[in-house]
Length: 569
Image (cartoon, rainbow, N blue to C red):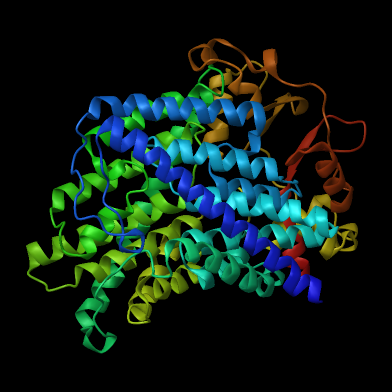
């Protein structure tokens, strides 16, 4: 008990806090020599990092920014490709994926992530610090797990604890970090077992980090007492929740659309972050809010020094496009910070617009802060930890009720899609938890009761048609059927090997796989699940009977999760 709830979380917290310190020092070093010295851009800072009296609104040499960000993307791409592929892209999502798929992270992945993310952000890429430190904390916890000789279940919990400890340190929010370690892996569930050790680890990492950078919150704002909030303001907060929900849908669509386009590019993987970085640098050259993490610009809004509505709206759009190109191209970083940035800019623009055009006296800093947490809650499907975050950001609970209104409206109206694609709905949908529920449930259930009507293509359909069907239905593979008989299967990865311009002229039968794995209606879900897990696939065609090729349905992992939920209800 002492080992599980004290020694292990304290060790995770200490080392994660120290890595967070190294990460910030690396960022400051690159910021100074690349952005300040080379590009001539001195960014504003939030109060918790030391407010600058002097900063440059625009870079002195903006034409250099696309080159520095592109070079940062190339360095990041080379390091991740050759040393640690799991470190590419969004750090938090990589940790979530490792959690669900029982993948082992390492201290090497943490070090590579520290370097590549520092290079990406320090050279001007639009990215956040919280995602990288989440993966760094998860990698540290995996390595510490080797020392403590943890079993598979304990390793999974330790990974969650390390993720939360990283966010607690870098955002100076120990309670929110602890709760997000239980919440971020699922859209509608919690990893309860991680909570208690995560409290200890998060407080420890926060304390270690704050010994170097101070204990004050990142942002400073003069928030009025809740008693002074008018009913009309509460209605306005509800409207902000609706606006943030719309922005979440736009942001997630844009982010994954850019990622999809970069997936199609037939260039070496390590070159793609350079291309994305060049575009992100162009955006930052014209709109400086999109350079780096940009928290200082939010502080200017909170202090009442930035009130230009057009510039703020342009900033929100620039951050959306900037992070989409920086991370969607495979660059290293995090989407937590940019989500907070976009939300803060949306909240301030919303309140300033209402004040200007409808003569309402809304408190702009309050709407800015509520916008920060609302948009992240909708994008990450993590409403509870973000509610705690608002108290830690402001040092009080004055905005708790307005935030509850806005956050939950955003959460419920922002759609099912998360900015972290590796999230699953509940623990029942996670391969990591399947053993806990026991295959005995699945042994009693038949494929015929849970299979669905298949979406199919024919051998002579074009590859472009098959790809469009996959995108429209959000699936990764399609059975290929000829006269009711399944003759092959085509997957998204098969199609990605073909250049977009050539897909209309190539037929499905030319690239489909004929090495078929199938199920029958009388198979148990346990049989199907074992086969899916062993072969690393997410769906199986269902044929009429063994030895037959007559297609009668399709069964997917999601159907197995649905079956367990229904059986256990």
